[in-house]
Length: 104
Image (cartoon, rainbow, N blue to C red; front, side):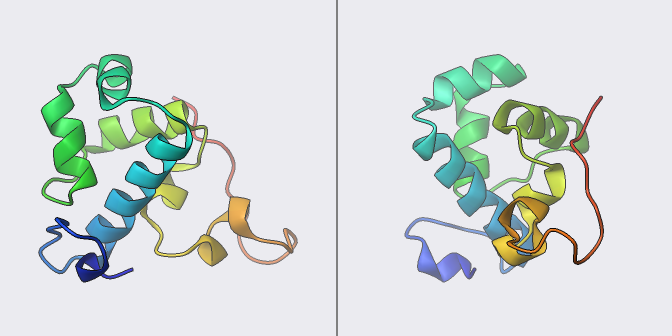
């Protein structure tokens, strides 16, 4: 995914930041979870969630793992560019490396 595809997305050209921003935003919207609820659950400000979704900031490992738990999605799936690299998006689950849930 290219940051230019999303209006207002400023990724600085980093494809991982762009992928994360899009997945974070899409997950939150499809879950109908307000930014305020995400922020409260993770222990951050609403402004930080907004910065992540606009590609202006990238979460720390600690926050990435918290998002992973909240979204019930392995952390690598939050930053991969397509679902083809994500175990949850594969049709053939026998191919490729096995990635289990992120537990902390």
